Every structure is written in C-alpha cells, then in structure tokens.
Amino acid sequence: MVDIAYLEFLEKILTQSRKERFLDVLQNRTRHFTVVVEDVFQLHNTSAVMRSCEVFGIQELNIIEQRFGKRIDKEIAMGAQKWVDINAFESISGCLDNLKSRGYQIIATTPHNNDCLLEDFDISKPSALFFGTERDGLSEEILKKADGFIKIPMVGFTESLNISVSAAIIIQNLTERLRKSNIQWQLSEEEIILKRLQWAKNSIKDSKRIEARYYSENE
Image (cartoon, rainbow, N blue to C red; front, side, top):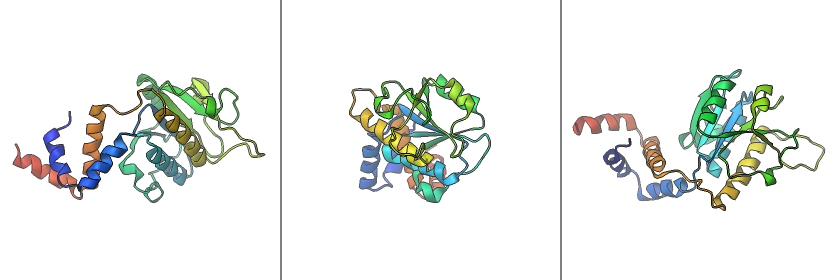
C-alpha cells in the first residue's frame, strides 16, 4: 500500500515538468509483455536489452544468471536501470515457475524454428519473451518448455542477429502493435502510483535520509 501523503510530499520536491514526464511515460508502460535474458555472457548486451525495454515501454526485465552472474553495466544502460524493474533468478526453473504463476506464456526467440514469424505473432496473450546467449542461443530446457516460438524474418546469408539487436527489433514491433490494439495492456492505477513513488525516490538525492526524516516528524 502506497503512502499517498508521502508520495505527494516527494513530488513537491520534483519540478512540474518532471512530474508530468513521469505520467506521460507511465501511460505507455506495460507488463503485458515481459523480457527474459538467459546467461548472456557479454554484459553490455544485457544492458542494451534493458535500454530497449525502457525505450519501448516494457516495465520488467528478468535475468537468469545461472552461469554468468554479473551486475548490469550502468554506463550502457544509460540510466534505464532506474526506470525498469529487474528480477534476477539463479535457475531456469525458478524463472519459468515465477512467470507461469503470473499468467505468462513462455515464448522462445530463435532463428531455427518455423513456428511463427514476428509479424504473425498473436499479441493478445501476456507473453514472456526469452532471449539466449550470443553463442548458443537459448538452453534446451527453455526450448522444451516453451509454449511457442518467434523469429525475425531474414533474407540474407546470416542466420542470426546479436541478442541486443534482436531484442530491440522484437520489442519495438510488439509494443507498437500492442499500443494500436484494443487489448488492456497498460499498468493499473495501483501500479502507476507505485511507480510514481519509486521513480520519485530515484530522482531525489538522499531520498533515504529524507524518508527517515519525514516519518520521524509525522509519527
């Protein structure tokens, strides 16, 4: 439960343009799609995927760090980590169970399966989009448990794209189609209020000290 009085207190510290920008961005945020990266060895690729999520309105990024546990490259993410929710998992099964329990279908991105081209993908169902390692793609465990497959149409000799490029193409395509649809894809009012609070905290220097002082004075 968000403390509305505290949220209003924090937002008084922000500029009017900042508050309006938060509201504008939140109107285009979605959890209808969520993105998952599995054991991506090159750290800058994970950071670039996070940036694509932020730019195109995906609120949540899930990271499976079963083999290569690494922190996000903040320079390449360019601040995206302040605005995107990150869930880290130490196992594939833990990630899959979490997503399925929240109603997502598991969609594996792969250039080697003819199940569905990007342009034909059904956007109506909440979907978790899985992206794999640079060298080997997604693990066999994920491919076996996937509910569906999606691939980017290609007409050249090269059979695959860099993970960050693939993610950007797929995320942009699906979110653009989603915003033009009649699907209820936006965040709930409760989620928007929660994001306003978190983003306000992320935007204010010494927010923890300010919070402690606020509650000590308003007990």
